[in-house]
Length: 362
Image 1 (cartoon, rainbow, N blue to C red):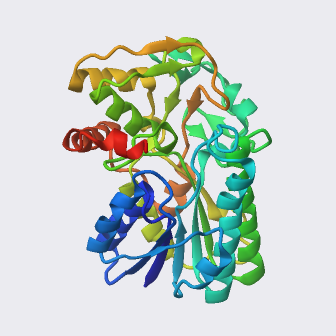
Image 2 (image 1 turned 45 degrees about the horizontal axis):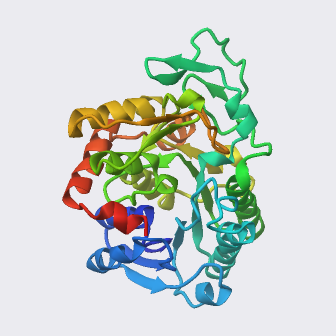
């Protein structure tokens, strides 16, 4: 089997290459990356050691994609991953759309030409921001938690288990979320029209050793690295208390699901989203607030003061936990790595690489 990984020199792409090499016998891995993100160049040697053929190319350029050798599957791990992309001054809205949607279109044409299956790594940020902000949560023990007295089924697509796939995707969802939701829709249409398999995995926060120390690339790695190095940290918004919650997932667990998907029979042509679209996150058991993460860091590294700043940040949310029970039901998949294991792995990497923050912040 030959698999093409886009964004191969990023944290997720490199982690998936490691995991797939270990789990799929005889797999031939090809990667493509434009190496534009700070730190990605360092993964060249890692990929070479894994036997990955890395192509320096840009998914926005159809000619770069057309020049790639044929593969059986494409794992699309390339994107501008920041929810603030297009409005933060680092990239324009047009650049964001070209990266996240235009790149998907070029990949879909590649899949159509080579009859390759596509695994699209989408995001939890496709869900409606106003609907998420209105969820019945309140601070308890240093974290926002689902209100236990909320009537069952009173919130469509959400419960104490997290956000389900049928939760609202009505705008606004951010420009970033819009590019990913549009990519999902186009990918499903290509699958129906041209008959190649497509699986869509809406990922929560992925975290693990080697993740670059930037908030837009993973808040857990960012927080642990900065805490260790005694860099300034702030609780932003929500009264400046650090109660906001995210769940976390290690890429090894994502790779386990991908392994199942590339070996599964192709979904029927008429299969709808319930057979093709999955939330893929650590779930409520892996959900942690920034305040809880700080407590973990204090225990490991010693206390570090956090600045309280109640200023709201665009698109921020109090509680984002993915309910991955659809994936569990269809694939018999569930995460295996607990948050403390993930945090310890990140911390050990940070301790071994004292210059990691400077490298990844560019």
